[in-house]
Length: 92
Image (tube, rainbow, N blue to C red; front, side, top):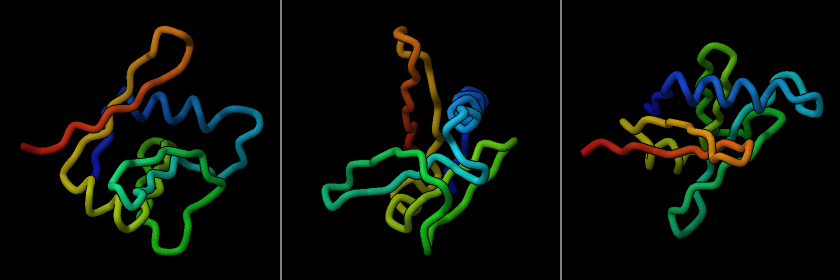
């Protein structure tokens, strides 16, 4: 299963507490046909999504992303312009 660093948890919590984000929302990670990952804020999980909830940081993984990210860790860092950049560390 995907694990979250403390920095990722903090960044996701900040995103989810914005005024225009509904209660129960989360960061959804989905995979497109080229295996690229897409991160979006979603009001809730889609059918078949795996839900990860750690300290109010909710992640929704589509089935393909669940497999792709198995054993990986999600991290976050400031992009220097007031935003956040997420990175995935995959197992070796």
